[in-house]
Image 1 (cartoon, one colour):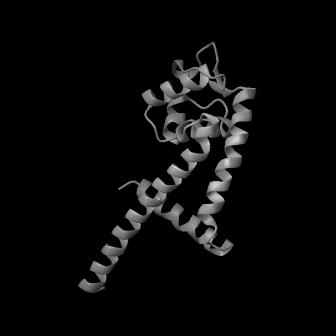
Image 2 (cartoon, helix red, strand yellow; image 1 turned 180 degrees about the vertical axis):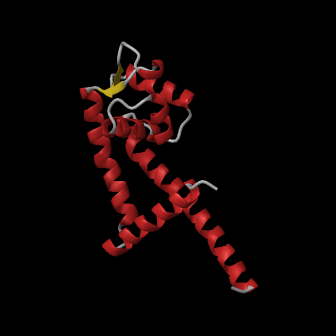
Length: 151
């Protein structure tokens, strides 16, 4: 590669980073718009989805998977608990953390939210054919993995 190729590659990388951030922000905004009438935030939706997919998950792991701090997750779970969408086990488990599970009301709220979010993601991908969707998934997965790799 020559200097011109390096500069073009760097400019493209910067443009892609900005585009990814803009796409994430637009997705978050659209999800917020469809979840708000249900009384849910995007973070609450992520929490409920993760609890459904991974019953018995620790609070620390739940926070990691939903991209919030442990302290923020604790506040978020307390709010969901007050609204009857989750409940915590009475007895602490490993590392003195109490397991959090969905209640029947939480499962119902999540089902309604998933239907609305599916409309948002369908809209987001509407301009892509199946092969482009698969290529996008593969490219984003490789990009994520490169950022998470050690060193």
